[in-house]
Length: 171
Image 1 (cartoon, rainbow, N blue to C red):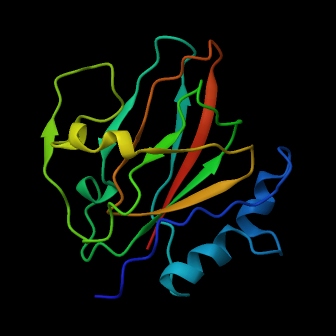
Image 2 (cartoon, rainbow, N blue to C red):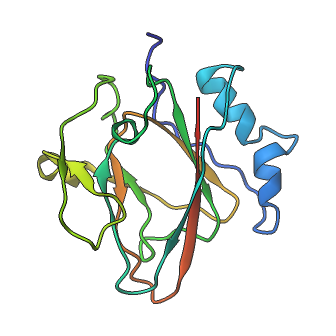
């Protein structure tokens, strides 16, 4: 298999009203960044819009995207395109640096909790979650992460509804 791409986060200084430019713009747009990581033969195979209720919203448990995606081999990158400003208060993406490097899926536990967006979480995350880094983005900015990266997000506690991001898995 090819070497693991780093969990490098690329940002584009796109104005809030110009999200489309992030996708197809002429200057190092999102597509160009994905090509840098996984090559030119790419396909967008899905999308999800995450809306986080203000106060009493749901968290996204720590997970790896590969646990949910029925793709073999797991040669994929997630594009996280910011719709609203992403701050600590509205539950930013958090990740564990270097957690993708062994290119293996870690054990996940099934959750019975209904106050989460996904029904699984990484089994031993409590041992390493203090290493987490948060990703703060302005509208139109994006981050890319590897299918094996440990990541999640807290609930939105800002008091305002937040359309935090559009997830675009590519392979």
